[in-house]
Image (cartoon, rainbow, N blue to C red; front, side):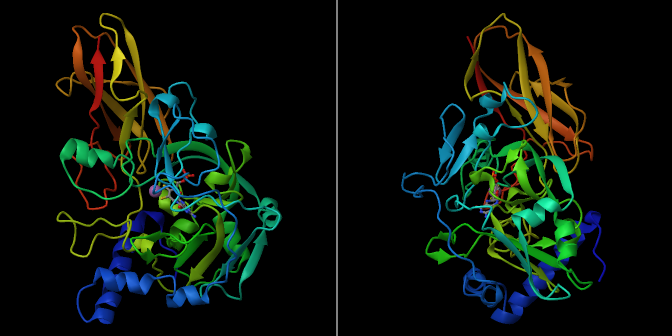
Length: 427
Ligand SMILES: Nc1nc2c(c(=O)[nH]1)N[C@H]1C(S)=C(S)[C@@H](COP(=O)(O)O)O[C@H]1N2
Ligand SMILES: [Mo]
């Protein structure tokens, strides 16, 4: 089978979903049941038994959930990052003074468990599975470094970025980490092409999916052991623009961001960019994990029964580089700044409102449309009168997608793309 082009991803995803649902229906004698899905996907599932055994590495002190240390290695100064359980969110006001790329000291961290402390000298990447022409192939860190190096400027963004606004702006009940807009960062990544690694490993003509898996601990939630973090990618995307990155902003990858090697899957939900990758299954059949079946699909009344296809490309969003409730002096000209981005293209237009959405004006764009990155923008504002107001920014991408006033809700709160009402006060 020939790999489908990236433009056919949605077709691919819908086909995968049908196959998934068909498989489930056969297994359960009816519609897919969540409990059955969880059972099939448990760590002791059939595929997991075939996977190479991986040693449990040392990791940063973890706790997170009960107010313990979050399992993150780097310092988490409160002026740069806000700790949320095992995760840390970038404070947008901390991006005001940065250039295009997000410095590591303020780059958000999304950890399902805790950062493992891996040594590049002993690390191995095992590529294995029914989609290879031969047996499993191991790569050392040096092997990856000796492949052609590619540099890529791209955002990594959590699909749940902005999730808290489903509740604060729309009154929707959603589960998951209550991010504001800081679960995104842009970096200059350097690494080997996943395509080159797959070719060296002998990817066969019948391969359809690849599933990278992290070396961090098993993700356990609500009494269910979901196993190691892993999520399948269609071969078309894997061969297109995915990196096995070993550098971030010109330095070796930091522990929290995947040291020694992570995937960077441009424009896709952050979960695709598996950190601390230890093995990659290449299969001649569709692959499933909790992260493309019970998580990272859209569930709820606005979506198909049993959930949407697995989510992939990120929507269009915007943020101001201020803390909520920032005070602005009346009668003074301020230069309001922010950034907008979209997984579906570059940013073509940004409009700003300083009066809660009654009137809008175009912002000045400071970066050319960037396919996998963001665009910085600014507008001048001289507020008159004092009191509370709301700042709004509404972006349109090069594919013509504009942020709506209201995001379509889903139970797990992914893809909040509505215009955020950013509180401010004029004094
Ligand atoms: N192995 C592993 N990879 C992972 C995760 C994880 O917990 N474990 N989290 C994913 C999610 S949900 C996101 S949004 C990104 C976050 O990348 P960052 O922590 O470098 O910002 O990593 C992804 N890769
Ligand atoms: Mo995420």
